[in-house]
Image (cartoon, rainbow, N blue to C red):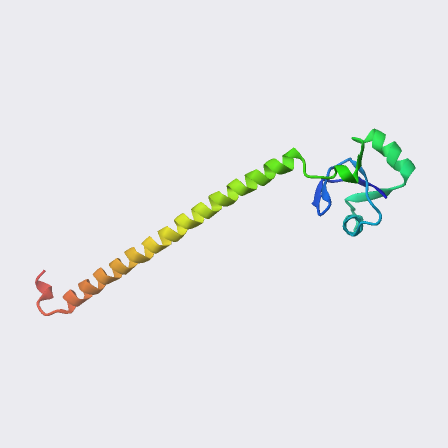
Length: 130
């Protein structure tokens, strides 16, 4: 089966790039599920093509790309590395927030203790002399 991708999508069979024509295995359950999902709706992402249309469209588009070629590209590997780096930054910032929250609770407890001491001293006889 031939399909033309109208919008880049990351799928279970790989990244489908805009204006690429793909030949997908009709017997693959993953490919069938992707095609069924992305050809549905008012504005489908994939358009099914006949072999003749695929050759004609493929020449006008970027070219024919076969199912074997639908694999993570270098861009996808870079994105994975960026995601990993950002995830570690998030974990570090979360740790800082947790530490700050613990410090905040400690400071609030100290403040409450001081406020309690002030209240006790104010209630004591002879506190009006201050």
